[in-house]
Length: 372
Image (cartoon, rainbow, N blue to C red; front, top):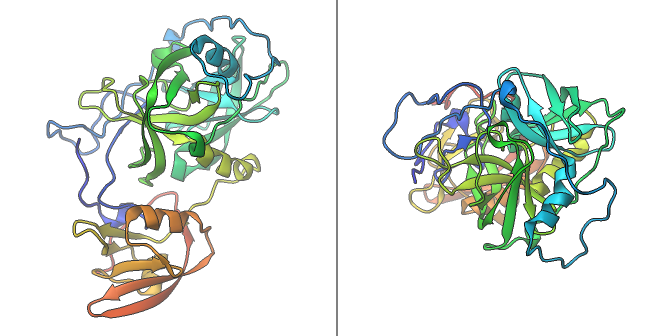
């Protein structure tokens, strides 16, 4: 698997560094374009084609009535049909002018969650519900940091069923999980596998290069059209939103990634108000090749620049809490919101310094480079 050893400061935040790996998004318009214009024989950061609207198949009937109780706690799904029957009621297909993806209801008044990259540049979409209804929807809020988009439809005449949710705290490597969505425009498709890894940091494929934090790795098959759907546990609870795969040739390779339901639920209250979710931002990239967090570049006029952070500084702590690894830094930054004051303890040469900063909000786009 290819790892990116360093990235320009213009495209990274305080939580993006050498360990970020590139992935393939599961719902992007067009063919297999390569952003870097080439291929070195390893896994590529490429866009997979999205199923065309014309190929969408009729939505199959689901043998369960809306409103039936969820499975009891402690249920172990020896037969995935029960977990499927619980979760699929909330699933929808998201159709844009460029292709299709998946989504699911998150509010009784018609809000649907999907991946931001499913929409591309489209702000109006068509939502296909479980009864086959096609309803126009509109983008109302984004969570750029988690590649999420909230769509609103008129729920009149639509049976809206909300899912239940599981937590990262309950997931273990080896736990069974299933992916629900519309791969290749085949709605209500279930594939099953296990949790292959937790806490993965991934390069995002939305409209910015903001990284995805703390994703779930799975070997449940994910293909074009799965983006924005559900990763469910054996009780039919949503634990993640399938987002991307690692692949050398646009085909399923057994390595997929999902944004956690925990991350989505943290952003949902803000998004339901019609506001984009906020995420703390410093504007700095790191070189981790020596095992520490050495500043590689600082974006001009960013919070890091205004705090006086310099190339070569080695970050030691955030708000007096140790932050000498990527995981620690991510944890510290995740506890902050834009506007929060913070201190950054660094080693500069033989000296230890404490710098004062104010967390910014991730910009919609990042441009420019370091100040030097």
